[in-house]
Amino acid sequence: MNMNGTNYQTFECGAFGDLSRVMLKDNLAATGMELSLNRLPAGQAIPFVHAHKQNEEVYLFIRGTGTFWIDGQGLQVGEGSAVRVSPPGARTIKASDGEDLCYICIQAQAGSLRQATRDDGFILDRTVDW
Ligand code: ZN
Image 1 (cartoon, rainbow, N blue to C red):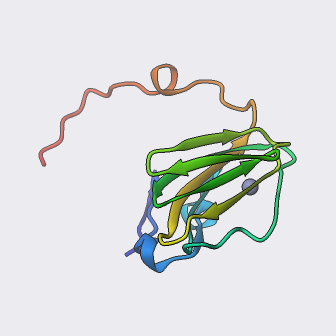
Image 2: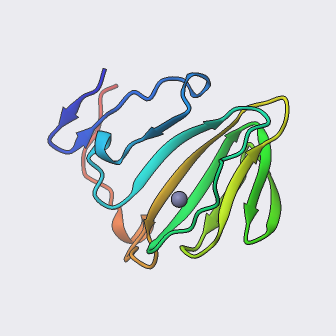
Image 3: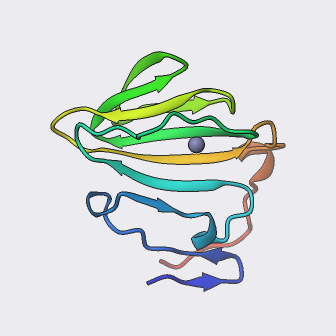
């Protein structure tokens, strides 16, 4: 069930094994990033090479193995691999034979991050009764 609150939105994407691609920016009302969950069927490739105008991308591979093609170089990726690509990087992905390749892609404007975990987050004086 999808839920919305004052400070949050949720969206149920379903199991990776059942999806091909789910874009989350609009479903989550995200304002600073685009996110997608992706499953490339075994042996298949994204049928185009692409780049971006302003956004860098981070690909987080969570299942399967494959080849991440970037600027003419093929990188072997699999569960636990993380790849960041600058906007002009020419990229595409192919899943290895025999197993689907599942990954999360996060894109945000390159150079836009002004603070991160330790500079932006802070501990609140609250407790939770689980
Ligand atoms: Zn992209």
